[in-house]
Length: 144
Image (cartoon, rainbow, N blue to C red; front, top):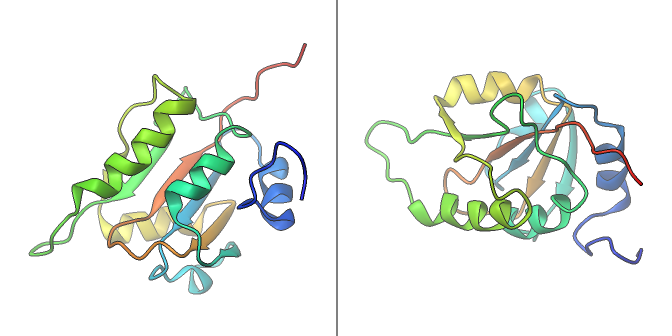
C-alpha cells in the first residue's frame, strides 16, 4: 500500500488511471455488467462498491470540464430505478468536483457501445441495478 492512495485502488487500477489522457473514459461497472465481453481492458474490484471506488479515484483524477464528465445507464422500460444510486455517487463526486453536473443518462445499448470505446472497465462489487458510471478524464492541473 502507498500513503495517500485509497486501499481500494490496486496497482493495476493506479497504473491505468495514470496512463489515461484527457478525454479518455473509464467505466465503473456494477457486478452484473458484461465487461469482459465488451472488449477494452477489464480490471476487477470485487467486493468494492462504486461509491467507495469513487472516493479513491477522484482525489487522483480530474473530471473533464469541456464535455459532460459523467454518464449512467437510463432505466429500461418497465424497470425500476433506485434514486439512491445516483445520489450516493454524486455525494462523492461533489466532494471532489463541486461544480460537476448530474450524469447524462444513456439508453442501454448506447451505454454498452460507449463502454466498448472506454480506456478500461472496472467491474466492482456494486449489486444495485443501474449502478454503472462512466467517468471522462479531464486535464490534470499543473503542479507547483
